[in-house]
Length: 477
Ligand code: SAH
Ligand code: SF4
Ligand code: F3S
Image 1 (tube, rainbow, N blue to C red):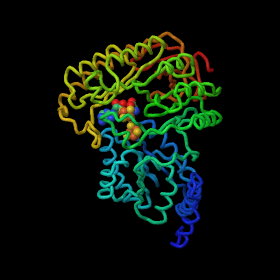
Image 2: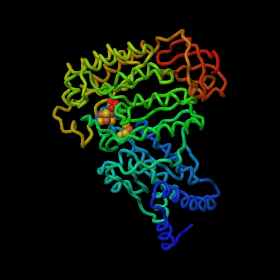
Image 3: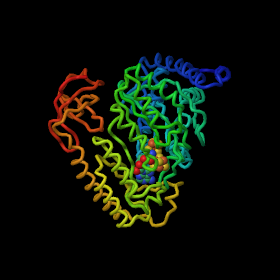
Image 4: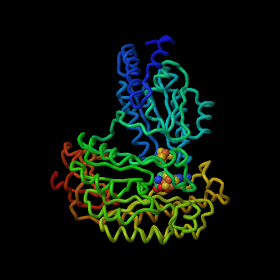
């Protein structure tokens, strides 16, 4: 389908100004173009969305896929698709390097299939230097947009189809929150729910506040309505998402308690809690509501009070340990997991020993360990004393060994008990087994019929296998 420039002008002039109506209009316009292309090719068009980074991006990708399916694309895992979208992360340098590498590979695919559309979005695109580099060196990219305008995918795609040139639209800062667009969930039975966007904490190493903007909390009623709608659509587990849910503007413990009232919702998770403002109220609400998962992700970052100050984290080593003690003494069966950065500028062996000390005392069920990555634009990037690579690697290995040893002991302490799990999928390694997730986030593999997937079941934990259990199904629930 080829439009004249007059027709294009007319379509653009008729577009509603209000959102989300404007986007539904462009979805319709794109659908017409896609139908014509389908006819020409004699097949459906495919879309492949590749997501990097955190739960926020995963959730955004569901929204992006929702829009693409509404336009008429069908999802594919293969990057040999008609439309390939990378939803990028820039929290560590490594994530960026991977995207550039894969863009190189995509160039070959596009040489073979010139109709292929390549799009980039997500946190990396909020950095000017990245967009400049792509404009210069990756001219085969067709569409670039940022984190504040993912809802405009249909409009950008329409402009690409009709103008045939690279479309770049990136906002410097957040605009209105546009919701109620289609979204396509990866799992039928569980879903993330954004409760807030952005971050105000400016931890000195972290790029997130620069690429996701200041904190914006959604209205409580909007969140609860979304959860009720998900429940009506078969969802039984939700994960409330925010960079720091404890600073949710309208009261996080209250929101959790109200979400737990929705009968069809069997389990509620949340991510992430900043230790500086985890309240007693929150601990009490978790304790009182068995539906709220026995799991808190509580990023430590460093065990050294001196480094924590440099990181702008607003808590001390002792404060963190007291908080862990309080949580564990109130809620006995809770798992506490964490994130730790090794090699922050100026970190001494003594600072690092403090980190090891906290790991020993806090008994984390699991910990993600990261090597400090210098992010330009952040305060830490300007700090003197960046730590030499060999020292960082050595510390990283020592930390990982300690974390692994402790985590195994800690997570495997429920052997012999019977627990409720959400049956999530067929085991990836052994298709004769199902995989269930416990409230505390541990996994158990057991024999059972596939129609248990997406339901709650009671399982006996027979055998501890280090990081997971082997179990026996007792009954479905
Ligand atoms: N909002 C969450 C974290 C989001 S980023 C929180 O505050 O806990 C996820 C993790 O990436 C962080 O917890 C941190 O451990 C790690 N991280 C962030 N910036 C980093 C950097 N510059 N180098 C290495 N790791 C980093
Ligand atoms: Fe980054 Fe800190 Fe915000 Fe987490 S709380 S996203 S680590 S600035
Ligand atoms: Fe990465 Fe953006 Fe999340 S930088 S960690 S995808 S908020």
